[in-house]
Image 1 (cartoon, protein in one colour):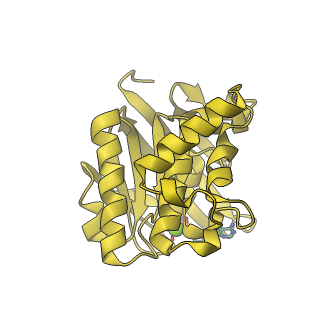
Image 2 (cartoon, protein in one colour; image 1 turned 90 degrees about the vertical axis):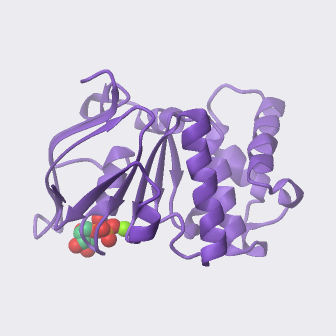
Length: 222
Ligand SMILES: Nc1ncnc2c1ncn2[C@@H]1O[C@H](COP(=O)(O)OP(=O)(O)O)[C@@H](O)[C@H]1O
Ligand SMILES: [Mg+2]
């Protein structure tokens, strides 16, 4: 592992449906600490599969993934690893609908050893950062799409992870809200030196990153 890298992937393969669908076909990829990269490609090209693998949400058929110095094949407690190292901003549906905004942001902090009042202070801090301090008692269904996506950002930031993974973070938003989400993400990368890995099928969104990685049929295009 090169010390300047936070992600190193070698010859990664993943198939679904008993090998009938090859989602990733020998991916080699290195991402530097503090880098902002976008992963672009058409629908079905393997972008989300690749992001899920980096996030230790799914396991590989072959190849290796090293994240923040850890070989994911050898990790025992993947859920602790995820909550310490990774913030996830996925599509809108993954907020818990019957919990309030505040409760949704508290979730990743459980089990991290913080006291209740520290957790609440941190949740309020990140909710303020995304300008939702006035809506902490609402349920996700009582928010607009843009506001919900800001809750997802606040939740991803709760544990101050060094890596943020975003899958189509602006996918279902109008351009004004999409712009705002992207600005917040870019700011995090610039000011907090967070490594930001963003999947999108939108060339304009992808161009905000420092580097664009193109995936086609489960392979990286060079
Ligand atoms: N859980 C799954 N079961 C079966 N096939 C899947 C599953 N997830 C993804 N696929 C298939 O793997 C390929 C890559 O999917 P995905 O990574 O979601 O692409 P993208 O995010 O680029 O649209 C597609 O052919 C998709 O249908
Ligand atoms: Mg996808």
